Image (cartoon, rainbow, N blue to C red; front, top):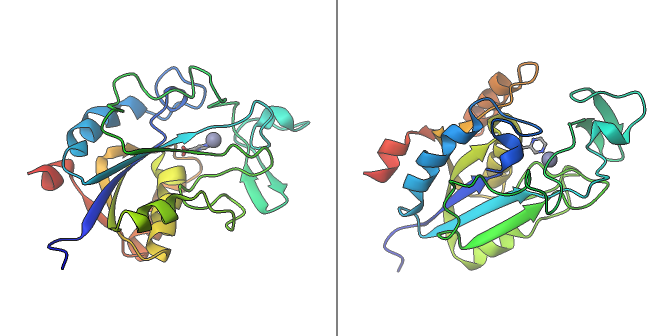
Length: 209
Ligand code: VGL
Ligand code: ZN
């Protein structure tokens, strides 16, 4: 009989390109690092994701004529924001922030490596059907509860959190351990959707004492 549920810490995309000076810098992105490092020892399972695009990825504005970064387009699965080139496989921008503790991670999961599909969520790509394999891994490890951290709150963290709820996990968002891009109200919308889905919001302090 399990004494307590198995909890996993999910660290989303804490990569140089999402931090200050990066290609798709999230304001104060690097501020999440000390909180995440502190959280790691309090979880039985720790997983980090890495946005990992080929240099001709369809989510890049540079791959579309007459499009600038942060405009939108229709791809074969629907609406897609077009981004500056970022997190190109093997580049310095795709590497984890140098201060992020990687050694405690049990699994590093890469996503967004298919040229024609973006992948915000750690569970499903943006066509909403192609799985990343993370759910299978967590099920096999007996994980039922997830604490989410990382970048960006209103894109990859939010998509991952909502998918996790629909897959049946209990989900908590760690507030100081996330930062947002906030594009046209996307942060407010993400907060509303996560609250409606029953996601809890917690502080690092409450999870580490
Ligand atoms: C992300 C936009 C494009 C994220 C990744 O990690 O939130 N956002 N690729
Ligand atoms: Zn990306």
